[in-house]
Image 1: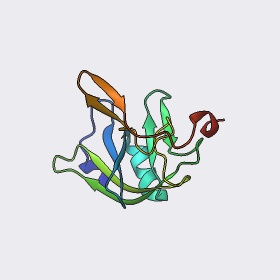
Image 2 (image 1 turned 90 degrees about the vertical axis):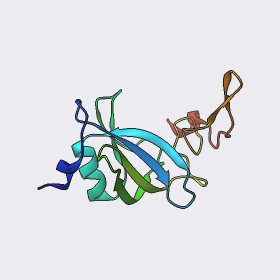
Image 3 (image 1 turned 120 degrees about the vertical axis):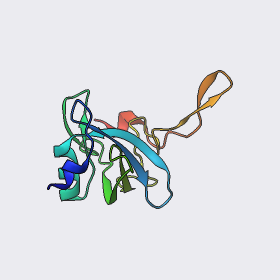
Length: 129
């Protein structure tokens, strides 16, 4: 039996994936993978996701250079969520978000609104040419 068969894929053949920075424990981003993306990630040791907006595989950092080196791949108790423990490469400190921030989870609920609480580390206009 293939290890990918143990995963409970959704009706679109996808599984949710959380990318967590191994050194800090910071949750950097959430994305999706299909079988091919997860197999490729395990094979090359870098995060490859399924881009729902582009309908294709997306090697994280292919445009920005902000590659995610995968140190550990874990599966939750229900076999329906993958956790990648990663080292975020390409900028110091690491940038995982397309907005130029360390983490995609930079907005905090305050009162009745969302407030950006983490700084932009690099202008996205300079990241994506």
